[in-house]
Image (cartoon, rainbow, N blue to C red):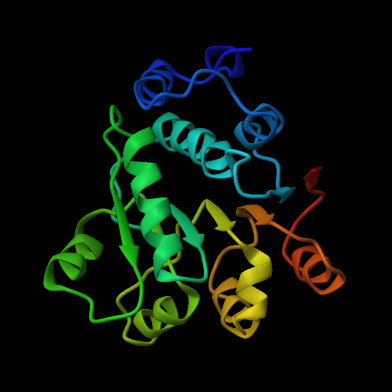
Length: 206
């Protein structure tokens, strides 16, 4: 099994190969095709399963396929901590090396002038912590009107850290026509119920 066999485009295959990836993990094999097909996903994803690439690669391909002139954010990725935001940022930079796509990361702290300028120009992918994102929404710096895909990463940690209400507020601002990808290392009942409130006929990947 190769990355090419997942019907990924050459720029993505080239980038992941150069990054040292030799073949897809089981999670990547199971997740890439349904994400490319527009399906909602609920994934039980432990560390070391290649989770980030499992959703990043098809997301980047969908963005490339639907590239158009715009300023609105198209992909929103929520994760609970600054460290996870930075990890996701680095991975997306690696996988999108040969694609003309833009991304921005937002976490605790003051939004810089360059970040505000980026929000005014073009951001394909926004990676953020929920609390900080809502701060910017209240300041009217964020436009969610064109969100195509929402990713909740480390959802169990998000709930453990008390972000469920923040996430619910963000969900109300995003079109219900979106595609939603929900990943959690554990799946206790409260996390599963939370997922069920936002996913439509999801494919479950264990």
